[in-house]
Image (cartoon, rainbow, N blue to C red):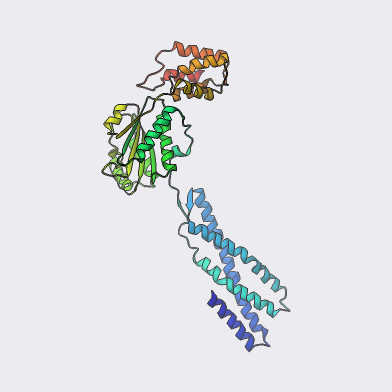
Length: 391
């Protein structure tokens, strides 16, 4: 830039020295600089508009903008703002076209000549192949609220799990407990803790259920790593996932609601000696599943205490903390939920805002019903849930 300015000024000076009585030469040099500056500045404005448009589109696609693109836009904006006064000054000089002030033009020429290289450099560095990249997926389970129940049992279980996750040599951790006790909620809380504390490069959670859809699970895991499968064949997908996950240094895989022993290799998940940086945390209804999966740490999630159950029920039902008749009936209903958070929340919300007669009617229905709790099926039986939905 310095050389460019010096060259232009030198030419201007030489022209003035040789043609003291011929201002046309000075005018010609001035007009050339103004033309260069105006063209370059206009080009920068147009280029900035295009980059702004690309950035807006990328943001609509949930992409993260590259730092160099962001920095370029800031520099371009600053340059356009700082040179606006020069553009205005050019317009003012035009007003003296038939009676030009040569000193004024010379001074303006110097300022313009200093800015032209800056604008040129911005234009040269504005050809971005892409302005952003896809945001890594974190898992909707870790974004939305989990309504974590801060009970003694859940706090104890969470502490044990996080301690095991941080322990060296532990790569398989199991959480077991009755259906409806809050295992999924706790699993999501573990994932949030691990991500917020940056214990792993990636935290992934998926649900197995009684009849797992392997292809669906593979697609979900692949999406977390921005992996595009080349085939629909389960085994080939598993191999592609295996290779991709091996490339990650530290991963936490949360397998929720595992019903029976399962070979995670079928999905494409390497762990243990095959990938020491991959830890597995699974939840299941049955303790024996933890044993069959060779969990090095087993944690049990118990039901809520009577006091904890009542506090949760009262809050979900919107009841006042008093000794009213309604609360006495509500406590009996809460007792039918057996300390299970899922049952408590479901029933309490169904009865919220009901009259005393409606509460009494519901309480009687629960007492008249049999097999409200079935550990092998739902934890809270369909009978209880159906009663809650028709109250």
